Every structure is written in structure tokens, then in C-alpha cells.
Image (tube, rainbow over all chains, first blue to last red; front, side):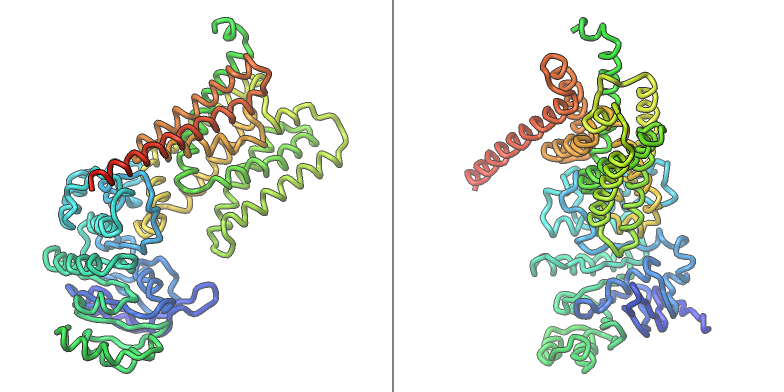
Length: 260
Length: 278
């Protein structure tokens, strides 16, 4: 088996197949995301986007293929966990939970290594992460009292609190109104520069992600197309993946000056 | 008051109410946060199967019921974690099967089981020194577990997916929490009985969630409510012809109703204030 890893890439996936409950969810997925890139994984509902993201964290069993994350194979995922930030889908957490914004961010510091131990430098790290997302004044505010957009920023701070090199985000824009989506994606672009992050964001919403992404990867159970946003939006494979016509988007992308 | 405490059985009952009050309100905090209320009812009713095994075989029914309660709690967590069946379906099956086993055994082995009525409806006044020792050991063990793993348990209740992704031992910690819940239910059965015990592991946390916005306050209020309910219920049952179990649960229900009314009044006041400010 070919085990060559490209050193310029933050994530490299080769011929990945995943089956859950005896059903093939992903098949023959191959792509790479270079260090410092902002990549968007797009596809219709049920395309396997979340499973693909979770496979990068070793949270789903891989049937075939190889996954390299920050130069390590999934078998060594324990060693790189602190270098990867993760923001799961909105429905994964309890919206009405009695924690302050600061407490929520601090949960991002927990790991197997912190069991039975205090969290060293907790407050400083939490404040820094909240500051990075413009929420430094929300440290003591009850998480359940925040708006959807503010909660998303706090959860983003949680995924940044360990100072990761790679950030994996699962549908962070779902349920937000359009201005909140735009502001969130803009924040991600800023963080990519200031924190020198590689970002992989899963979304079914092309419009909110395409303007900010360096690369789009379009899947629907299998690989359909990948490349710059303009290339992907002009590709006939996009229509196949979504099973609908995207003609108007290709010209929209050119007008808006999306990445060629 | 001093006259009440002159009786040995009342001293033991008061100590039992204190121990069980602390234990149930601590577990209740997690039951409400993790939405496990139905599991509380499921565990207690399934325990009837274990209690019946104890009664017909001559073993200690609290021990056999305890094994059943902890086994049910852990099996529910383990089976639902496999992802094929939802947690409430598993609880529903265990709930009915445990009850059916209990009824079948008790009706098949004809005999006189004086403890059965106490275990069904509780009899705090019959608590022995040995029972207090068991309650004390359960309290120390469970409080130690909660204190040592509080931040991890909170994380699991808040966002299990992130806890797994962060590398926390979510499966073992969750199963241990369920086992603690099973144990709590079983030692509390002597206080209020199989039929009413689920109220003790639900209402204190539910009241706290109505009035507190942070977990530290919620834990403190849950503790205060649990202790108030169990001690007030015990004293009410001394002065009025009410079974202690029922009195304790009724006091807790009144506290919950009061907390709900107070919250509604405050919400109305906030809404009025907000609309005036605008």
C-alpha cells in the first residue's frame, strides 16, 4: 500500500471508504488540503460531509483508504488531538445549559491528560480565545442567554482554546441569518491569517462558504469535484452532486470575484 | 422537637433523610442536565424484579434489587450506545420486564413477605443501622466520583460529541454515572419506595434548573431542595397520619410548583420591563 505523505498538506485523504450500519456512506474519496488553506466541503444533505469530517478525527471507523492529519495517520490520532480544533454541529450540544460562556470555552481544554487534574492557566487561555472571536466581554455571561450567532462565536472560541493548527467546523452557519453567516465566515478568514490556521468547513450552503474559501470539495457519498470556488461552480459535476442546475451560480461567482 | 429526636428510630430516620437527600439531589443535577428522568423511573420499577428474587430466595432484597438497578442502568446505557435502539425504548422494555418478573415471582411463590409493602411504598422509620452504613458508603463513593470527575461529567452532559473528540473516556464515565444513579435509586427505595423514588432523583434538579442559570448555583439549589423535601416530609409524617415517602414527594412537588410560579412571575416582570424600555 502506498503510504507516501505530502509534507505540504495539513490533511490528505486517499481513496477513503466508510460504511456505517452496513451502508456505504463514503466511497473513493481522495483530496488534500494544504497547510494554511481554507477549504469548504460541500454537498447536499445526507452526502456524508459530517462523516468525512469525523473520519479526520478518528471518530468513525475507516473501511478502506488512508487519512493523514497533520502528518499523522489515524492510528496516531491521540498524539495530534491537541493540534486539531473541532466544532461539531449545533444540535450536538444542549442550548439551555447552565454554563457561562467562559465555562463553555474551558471545556475545550479537557482531554484524557487533564483527568483528575486542574487546568493550568485556564482563565488566561479562555480569555485569549474569547478575545480572538471578539467576545472578551462575555466571559461571565450565561451561555443560554446568548443569541445563536453569539453562541457560535463562543463555540468557535472553544475550538481555538488549545491553539490548534487545524480547525474542523461542521455546519457552523446552520440556523444563522445571512448577516450572521457572513460575519462568522469573515471572522474565520481573519482567524486564518492571525492564528495561521488551516480551516476545513463543512456546509451544505454554497453561497455562504464560496466567497471565503480557497478550495471547495464537493461530495455526495463519493467524490464529485474539487478545486477553486470558481472551478467547482463551473464544473458539470456540481449539478450531478446536488442533482439540480447551478448555471446561474457560475456567472454569479465570476461577478463577485470568487477565487479562480 | 427534642422529644421527636429522643426516639432511636427517628434519629435513624433523620440521618437516612439527610444521607438520601444529599445523594438524590446530587444525582438529580445530572439526571436533569442529561435528560435521564425516564431512566430514574425505569430503574426503580425494574428493581422490583431484583427485590422479588431476594424475597423468594431468602437473600437480602435490597442487595438483589441493587444489583438489578445498577445492572439495568448500565445495560440501558450500553445498549443505547450501540446506536440501534433509542434509550427510551430500552428503558421502556426493562421497565415492563422488571415489573413483570417481580409480579410473576411474588405471585408464583406463595408466602408472606412483610418487607414487600415497605419496599413498594417506603418505610423510613424502619431504617436500621446496617441500612445507614450502606447509605453512608454509597454517599461517600458517589460524592467522590462526582467531585473527581465533575468537569468531565459536565462536558459529557453539555456536548458528548466534543467530549469524545477531545479524547475523554466518555463511555466508562457515562456508565459509571448510570451505575451511580442505579445505586442511588436503590438506597433511596427504603425512604420512599419503588413507586415514588423517581421523584427524588428528578424534582430537586428540576427545581434548580428553573431558578438557576449556572451549574454551581444549580447544584447548591438542588441540594437545598433535596434536603428540605426529605427532612420536612419526615417531620410532616410524624405530626400527621401520612406515610413518610408520600409526604417527602408531596413537599418536593409543592416546591417545584412554587419555583415554577415564581419563575413565571419573574419572566412576566422582565417582559414588561423590556417592553417599557423599548
